[in-house]
Amino acid sequence: MGQSAKQLFKEANTLLEKLVNEKRLKANGVVAFYPANSINDDIEIYADETRETTLFTYFGLRQQTLKPKIDGIQKPNMCLSDFIAPKETGIEDYIGLFAVTAGEGGDFYEKKFLEDHDDYGSIMFKALTDRLAEAFAEYMHERVRVDLWGYSMNETLTKDDLIKESYKGIRPAPGYPACPEHTVKKDMFTVLNTCDIGMELTDSLAMKPASSVSGFYFSHPEAKYFSVDKIDQDQLKDMALRRGVDIEQLRIWLATNLR
Image: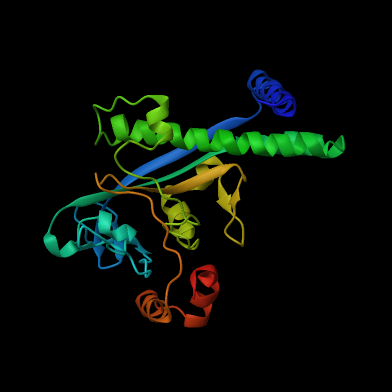
């Protein structure tokens, strides 16, 4: 590690110790589990075990890139709905939702850095709280696997295993490669009552506090992260019909994924 890196690491730890000792910055989170089934590329999330009332539908995007063959077998184009049992099978499957933040109380520090004209301290604080939010999300995912949902109760992983994501299940977040479209966060935040933990969305669907993470929990043993990448106009038109939204509006929401 170079001298500059060592100095940065030292300063980050000094700030972290200050945040811990002052106890102004707080972490908060909510997780929930709901009955769910897939219908083609979409996932219906139900209010209760009767599966009669749909809380909301996650409209999935499927990869449309040409995949190579491995040992003569064509690799599939994936969609998150592949990891939830199809409704037609009658299998009663489930999905998890979560929202966590490490930024509650952060306004105090952001104001202080601004008043002190301390741009470096402000950048360091934001970077540190972002890492804390990700660490909190990782911790809650472990709790979900071994305790709260308990689909992997006998998990015994080292830190290296966790870094390599050697666990069962995934926790994709809206805006990330597997589910790049953000609007589903409106439904997620409503269902999770995130206002109770001090989390909300801006008009542009950014999370407040900024040091926050939200997403889904999938327990399927073969679930893995992937990137949707570019999609064609046929999928855009099909999704517009499924969602009942204007195709031009959808084109704006999916701009970065359109060919």
